[in-house]
Every structure is written in structure tokens, then in C-alpha cells.
Length: 124
Image (cartoon, rainbow, N blue to C red; front, side):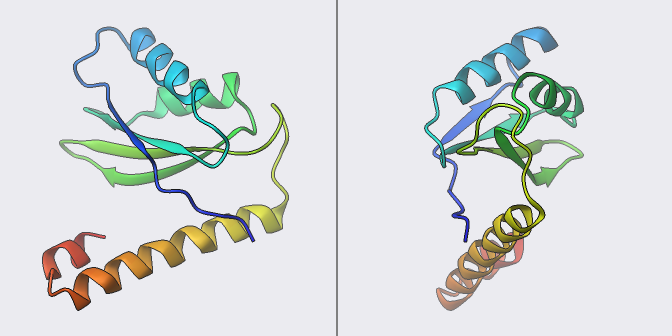
């Protein structure tokens, strides 16, 4: 099965300048990550352009998960795959990765609920 990493870095690009600067900054940060590690990108709008940039510049090397979808803040988690550029995922790899990701969310929510942190559990 695949492993699900917890992003170790948060990159808030809301205060950076032009869109191209934001994309370059996130890509440069991503390039420092070892396989299996990730980052969370915080933005002031839906990062469609960033996703397209990753698809063009790092095809097959990342996983993309939306964590928060506006309207004020958008957060996405980008995990580095252990794959060569352009390597497409097999269907089973994609399903296993997503299953592991959902299991991790479930564990986190149940732990928060068990600790009586109901607002945190609901937000997960």
C-alpha cells in the first residue's frame, strides 16, 4: 500500500507578488522535498493556475489534495511522489493512495472526538 505523508511545510503565498512569483516559489519549495514529504499551500483564491503549472512542470511527481476550498482561503496539500517525471500512476496506486489518505483523516477525526475536541473533529 502507499503511504500518506503529513505535509511538513506550510507555504502561504497570499503575500507574494505576481502569480508567476507564487508559482516559482511553490515549485522551488516542492523541489526541496524528499519523496513522501509534502507541503500545504495557502492562497487567497482557487489555485487552478498552480495545479496546471505543476501538471506541466512536474508531471507524475506529485499528489494534489484540496484541504479547504474558499471562499476566503484555499489550502491544498501537495505531496511528492517517489516517481520519475512523467510517470503516470497505475489505477491501483491512485486508489491505494486515496484510501490511505482517507484512513488518516478518519483516524485524526476520531482522535479529536475521543479527546472531546468536537469542533476540530468536525472540521477534519
